[in-house]
Length: 416
Image 1: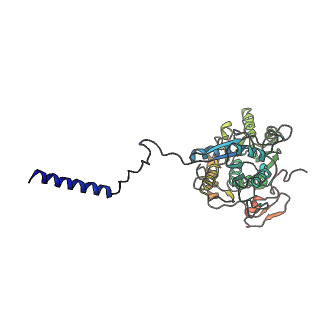
Image 2: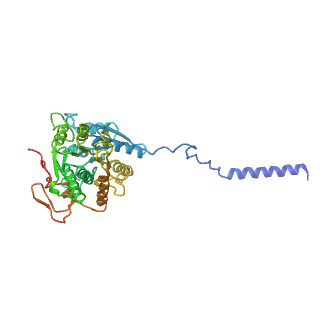
C-alpha cells in the first residue's frame, strides 16, 4: 500500500477518536476519602454541657458528692459532654442568692440542661423551669412532674428523678438490728418532710423484720429513736449539731447510729467512741465511698447511683425523644451494685460480722424476690391504723407518709 494512502487512513482514524472523546461525558472524579486515616478515631459526636446545682460541697462524702460523681460518669460515657457546677447552694453558704439565680449563671456558662439536686430547691426548680421553657430541668427528688402526685405542675420541660432508697434504708436497718448488742438503734435525721419520714420509717421496718425473723426477738424489745438536726447538714447556729446528736446516742446506750444526713458525723463519732473502747457502729448514707472514713466501725452504706438515670435522660434530650416524666428508680436486683444499671446500692462495711453479712444477703434476696415491708398491719406513730392486715401500700402512701410509725420514737412533724 502506498504511504499516502496509509497516512490518509491514519488521519481519518484520529479524527474518529477525537469525535468520540468529545461526545463522551467526562469521568467522575473519585469520591473524597471519608474514613479517618489508619490509627485515628472518628471525631466524637457533638456533646452537651449540663449544669448541676449541689446543695452541699461537691466532696462531702455524701449526697452532693454522689451527684457530682454521677456528672463525671456522664462525661465519661457521653462523648463531648461537659459538666459545670455550683456547690454549697444553700441559704447559709450563699445568703441572699436563690438556686434559680445560680441556675441562670450556669446557663450563661453554656449549660443547656440544669439539674437541681435537692428537695430543698423545689421552689427554685419550678421558678426556673417556668421562666426557661426551652431548657430541660431535672429536679432530684420532688413530685412536681408526678401526674398522680399531690403537687403536679404539668411543666413540659421538668422531670423529677429519685431513687427508691427505701430499699437501701431497709438494708441499713437490717444490718443495724443484726449488730446491736444493746437493742437500741439511733437514727440521725436531717429536716422533717415526706422524704425523710419515709426513709427513717423504712430503716425501722428493715430493722424490725431482721430483729424478729433472723434473731427471733420480740419487736417490742427493739429501740429505734430518731433525732432531727433541722437541715441536710450542720449549719452552726441554725441546726442542731450532728456531732453532739451522735454523741448523745452513744452516751445513752444506743450502740448503732444510722445516718440520714448528707455528711458523716455519725461515722466519725463512732470511730472516736470505739477508740475509747466502746462497742459502737455506724451506717453512713448517700455516697458509695463514705465507709472509708472509718471502716473499722462501718457496717455498710446505702447509696445513690444517679449516673445511669442522668445518662439516659441526656441521650433522650440529644435524640429529641425526651419529655416530662417522673422517675422513682429501684435497685437492679440482679446486681444492686452494678454501676451501669442500679439506682440504689448497698456496700457492706468491714465492721459487719460474717454471720450478719450472710443474714443480710438473705434479706436482700428476700427483697429481690418480692418481700414488701410496706405491707399491713402498719400503724402510725400515734396508733392510727395506716395499712390494714395484708394491705400493700401504694406509692402515694409510701411517698407521703404523714407520721413516723408505731414503735419509733421521735418527732413526726416539724415544730411550729
